[in-house]
Amino acid sequence: MGAARLLAGLVRVVPPADITAIVNVGDDVELHGLHVSPDLDTVTYTVAGAIDPERGWGLAGETWHAMEALGRYPSPVAWFNLGDRDLATHLFRTDRRRAGAPLSQICGEIAQAWNLGIHLLPVTNDRLQTRVTITDGTEIGFQEYFVQRQHSVAVTAVRFDGAEAARPAPGVIEGITTASRVIIAPSNPLVSIAPVLAVAGVEEAVRARRADTVAVSPIIAGAALKGPADRLLRELGHESSVVGVARLYAPIAATLVVDEADADQLDAVQAEGIRCVVAPTIMRDGPSAAALGQVVLGL
Image (cartoon, rainbow, N blue to C red; front, side, top):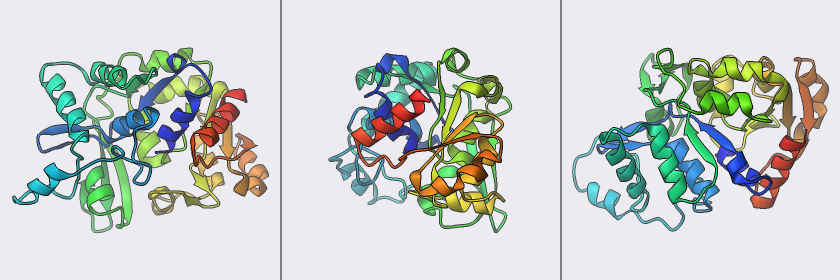
C-alpha cells in the first residue's frame, strides 16, 4: 500500500509516462481457478483513484454477492474475499494467461484500461512465490499467512520459491538502468521489496545505480503504519527502526528518507553508510503523497 500511495503521489509531480513501477508478484495466488495479483491490483486501483480508502485494497463501493453466494458451498479458500467488480480483473487476467499472454503484457493491458499512464510491470513473468515458515515449523503461502491467519503468527523464515530460476520481465532491467532516479517504496522490506530483488539480475541492477537510488522507510518511530513489517523485522533478527531499515538498504541505496518522528535518528542512520533525509512520510492524501514524491525526486 505504501508503494501504491507513493505512485499516486508521483503521477501528480511528473508525467505518468515517465514512471516505471516494478511490482512484487510473490504474493500472487490462484483462487477459485483465477490468477489473483494483489500487489499489481492495489497499485492499479490506487493510481486510478478507485481503491477502497478504508481497507486499502479492492475497489471503493464494492459489493460481495459472489462471495456470499460461495459461502453456501464448502470452499477451502472462503477466507479470501474477491469483490464482485474486482472479479472482472481476475477473470480478464486469467483468460489472457490461458490464451498464452505473459503477465507483463496483461499488466500493460490492464493499466491501459484504467488509464494509468505509467509503465506497470511485474518483476517477472515466471513463477515466484513467497513462502513463510511459522513457529511450529509449518511452511505456508504468503496469503495464508497474511489473510487467512491475519499475520497473527510468529515467523521464523521467509523464502522466495522460484526466484533462482525466474527471469526479469521485459523492461524491468532497462527501467532500472535508464531511470534518472530509482525509488525503493515504503513497503515491507522483507516480503514486498525482497522478492523483487530476489529475481536474478534485479538486485545487481539496483546496486549498479546505488548513487541514484532513494529508499523511503516504512518504519516510523519503531512501528509500521499498517501490516506486520515491524514484527517481521524483529522476528527475523532485524531491528524494527529506521536504523534497522538503513542496514538493510545501505548496500543498494545511497539515501534513506525517514519521517520527522525519527529526526533524532539521523546520525545513527548515517552511521550505517547511507545518507539520511528527514521529511514527512505519512501519505494521508494525494497532496501529502505528492509532497513526498517531490522530496524523493528532488534529492
